[in-house]
Length: 215
Image (cartoon, rainbow, N blue to C red; front, side):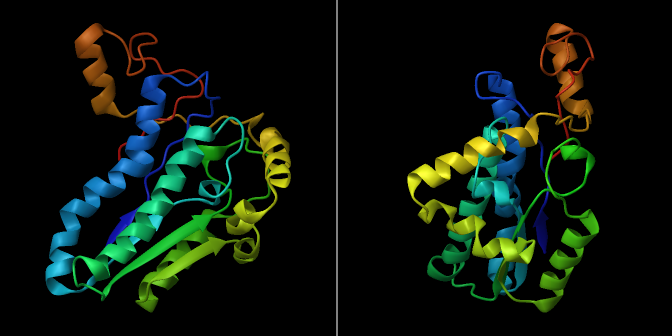
């Protein structure tokens, strides 16, 4: 079983985001799903047995100002899950390799500290994932459960309604101050090259909105 759960957020607008910000977000939140699956899937296919869990986010269905890169990377994770589920049958002849997608709302962790919205507890999300794994079947999960009847269907709304909702979501990121976790390998690499931190903002320093974790 493979659980793709790593995630980062930068909390910047599109113009504030640097190339490294965007690359980091997509490498951890989307590209890592491909790289890890490429390592574990061949054995699962050979045995026609296994499970891949993709932890995405409700943000993959609707983006908010100040977290566009995060939402886009989670949308990519959702598309990855959907495509993988189809390829298991059409290309790999491994229908018993199960896939589970978790799209949770704001979860009360240090990663999204200060996010202004109702929240889920991490234990709630973890318990639902464990329940899906033990169930042994492919699933598409949203939390809270009632969000399934609203969030994934927003793109079917009239455009003016979609636009209005995204504008109102601007308040959510106003006080965001996600936890800072330095990835030692990246920091050391930056210091070896130019004597500065990973984002080139002073030796060994990480700016206030930086979130760096290992994938």
